[in-house]
Image 1: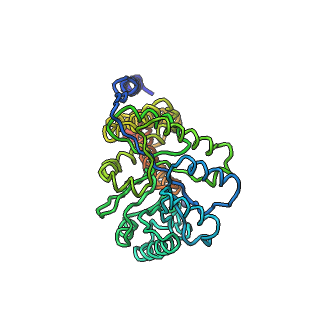
Image 2: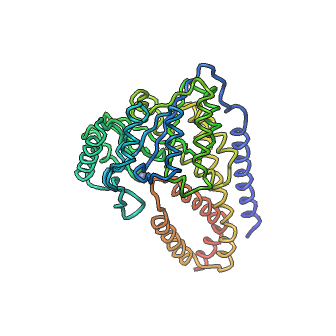
Image 3: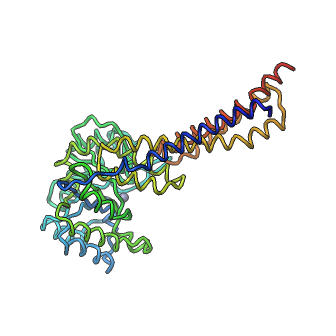
Length: 405
Ligand SMILES: [Zn+2]
């Protein structure tokens, strides 16, 4: 490598580091702390998925009793055609329903995975098929529970624009999925996605109850039947702590998904995009072990709603910067190998095209879940970093080789 090229590399590298460090310091500043708000209101929704897996065990009963004893309502996502619905589960749910503590939501059809890539029972399927399954599932649950079913929760949280159309045609008023989604919704249907896991710290709910904008809504997602499978996750302990937090604060209200989504339609409509970008950014930064940054981002996101956009954008920029720098660093061994091989210009072009093709195919095969488009984006930025290094590190070589041909 010539002196000139080495100098150019160091200039680029220093600029990268300088930009990243300043960005990190700015995001870490108290400028982004959520401000105290005594008039704050918090609403919590519990979304208990796959409740048909109820086994009648002591653990299952303990879980249901926790909510019943505390008078805390829940939305139970029930699959209509996976298991025969009846017996103890149905009578327990009807009991809670009579006390105003249960909403029965339609959770797909038979919870089958019909996708070739990823997991889905609805997304990717024809409109007529989706509409037919929603129609019969809704009618089935309404026959059993004698109440209108207004909420649809797609299995594996995966849905597409046909699902939205089918839901609004079949009289569903609310759809709830994962916050990673941002499918455009032109229908008179409310989308209220989960934005909080039962395993997330209750301290966010506590903080939001006294800080930030006027309203924070937590849609808490969990599977109570998993308590018996993943004992170390301590779902029961976490649910107990969250309920204690709720009871300690007078300004935290709990209601069902259907009620909350319809009552606060504007809140959810404003947040769909923010939810998607927050969750993607958090996953991305966690990959780089930026735990404190993710925590800071979460605090603002849960307290502030749309007001937390600037931090999400900055955090995303920072994450992309990290990815670009990683790609740039990866360029060092590649450039060394390239120079050691001292290939002709023609061969360099052929090899670059081949490597590019392998990279592209690899991305298609390996991106298991296209909902997390951010991983592909990050890989693209990483590639850009390596390419820049290649251009700076071998550019002169290319021209030198070509002139000797
Ligand atoms: Zn499910």
